[in-house]
Length: 123
Image (tube, rainbow, N blue to C red; front, side, top):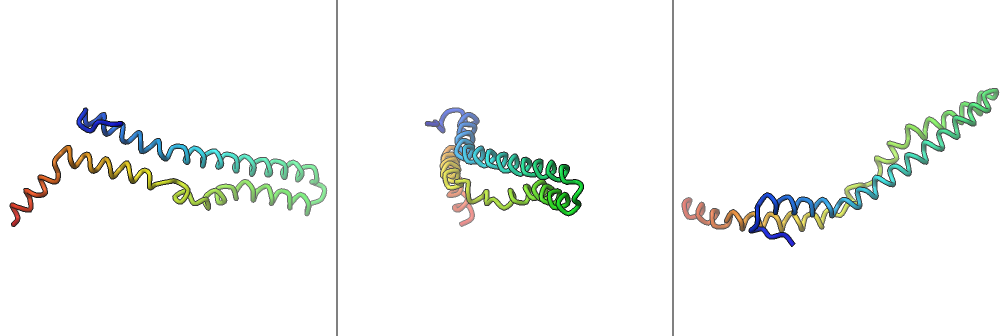
């Protein structure tokens, strides 16, 4: 895997890349669904505007189609903002990597030894 005794910057970089890779797939999945929903709402809005143009003689029908098209265009961002992104992403796997990194950094820099020395000085 990753050797913490090797170059510290290389170790940090590989650990960060590993953490990013754990959440990258769900993020791409969410972005794909965002694009699909936006495309669908734009398609519905376009169809509504075309029907509104075709029925311009009847003000009520044209107005309803225009209102539905407008609601689709401006409602899409609000619909997308209701998606619970924080619950979909798996942050526990990233926490494991972050905790391992913190432990390795603590051992590398001998934080435990330094804390013991501080306790002795204070006592």
